[in-house]
Length: 402
Ligand SMILES: *Cc1c(COP(=O)(O)O)cnc(C)c1O
Image 1 (tube, rainbow, N blue to C red):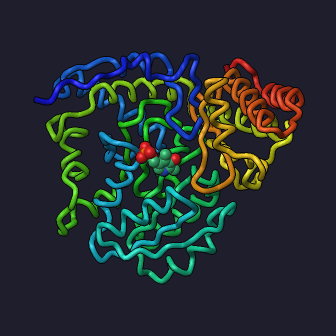
Image 2 (cartoon, rainbow, N blue to C red):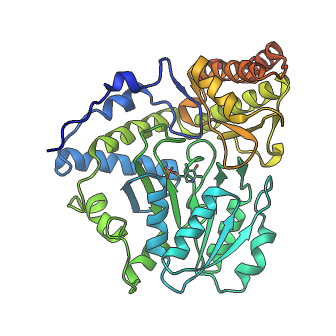
């Protein structure tokens, strides 16, 4: 007989409080989101139908779309990504994948796995994708689908020309899949106006909900392709027409992640209440202020300002010290968690949703500065903190960022 293992209570495993999650996600939860996440109700029936109906209305606002074809996914942002790919890409389809880094490459890999013939456009590090890079390919008329990321979290580059690239592709009959996992609700994204055919997002980033429940919106063009498709779909859970049963017809596909849906409802409510315009301004001001503070302290940012993402900041760490040791010190001494990177000599600080609050920025900048100094590099910490304060209050009412 196998005996019960000896297990520590969760209290003995969890990090010390007050913990501050300032990495590339998950991000801190507003209390009403956390509260909603602790509730379980019937996954079918009147109450759930009302919750789903409101959630979709709010998501349409956040995606800036009038599309009817909005679905949730029980799974990470990557599951929403896979849902876009497995429904829109058929075996043998030509797919153009704009790759800036780790996450945009994930879409290319998924497209290949379902039998797509993938052409990768490699965007050099620190650069944004341009219309020029895709123009010739798109005009060849070969491509049925294009994949692109709005903000590449891995190297903190913003694909500024997404609207032009999307419009061109769509006008040539090529469906456009956009990964907005880290950027949604932190900067403008206009699904309808930019003629995007599928937008995906996760919960735990810009929206400040829990990880594990994600959203996807398909355009009418995309939905038509899905309903006309004859090739069998390889993924049952991610089949959009089955998911439609729950998300639009009030019936059963799989048991929906009830608590996570309630949490997402509250997170979206907070976005709608703040309004997108105000939320974008908060992200702009907070991220800019933190960037200025980091630079004034004596550190260098990874990406040139014109293409720098404001939802995740990449910070170069001096050659002779280890980014992992800086992060370990921040975590152990200050209980502030930030992210490393995939092979680059940087650390990354998230600027998504609840991370963009003045008190979180001060705590993070202080922890980062003292932890870099602890590794033996001298910085001007007071200058960094005062510069951040100056930018936070420059032309913004500080009540908006608290
Ligand atoms: C985090 C992230 C993902 C993956 O999201 P998961 O929830 O970890 O699957 C995909 N794309 C981008 C741009 C991201 O930032």
